[in-house]
Length: 264
Image (cartoon, rainbow, N blue to C red; front, side, top):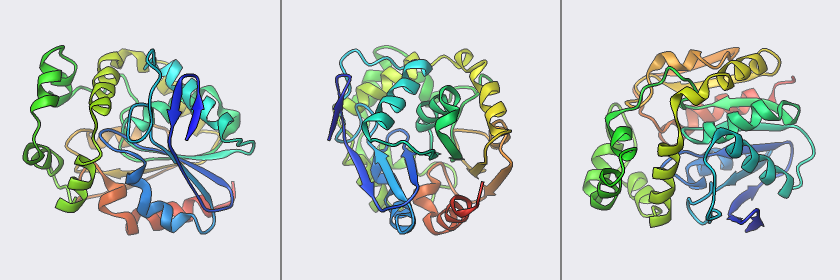
């Protein structure tokens, strides 16, 4: 457990070689990366934190969820991990807000980027569920009343191939602190705030390797957003939901492994 800036951060640290930093989304923990880490840790040092307030990590009481401060959290984490060489970054969902903001602010520290389904654009539009979470009282009520059955139904939306066992594993890791942090992040995030950050990310993508691994049947983020990062390569997967790292670890794992092995 790392302690810094009022945070206590649990980090999975496995393997040896060039560092790869994995940043999960909501309502996940570092556990979402376990299958990919098992595959990649043979040749890479794989680092996967539980983000502040998620899993075993504890957020500072005054944690600021603005893009500027999400980037600072990741940079503080990198410093605490003692990473001095360039890092390959892998992000999914709200992990993209943390990681891509950090990459924009610290491009000299980034070797390459892999992006799973995430929104980092002012043109994104909130889903009905997000609008509920963003509404005071209603969001808290929705979080409190979400049963295992309702959670399973939500996670199986679209073309999701998540198994009941995988969904139970996610549900069983959700804590009151995670619910509070999710509401804080979604209420702090204003889509207009991505203006400028998205163009800086595309400029960075013109200088370093960026790969997008995208589920086109994601019920939360439309297929066209896969093209908004300026990536040199976009691999699209049909017949999967929002959680590609869990739904298709062998497929995306092989592609991720090949991408990380390429020379710059």
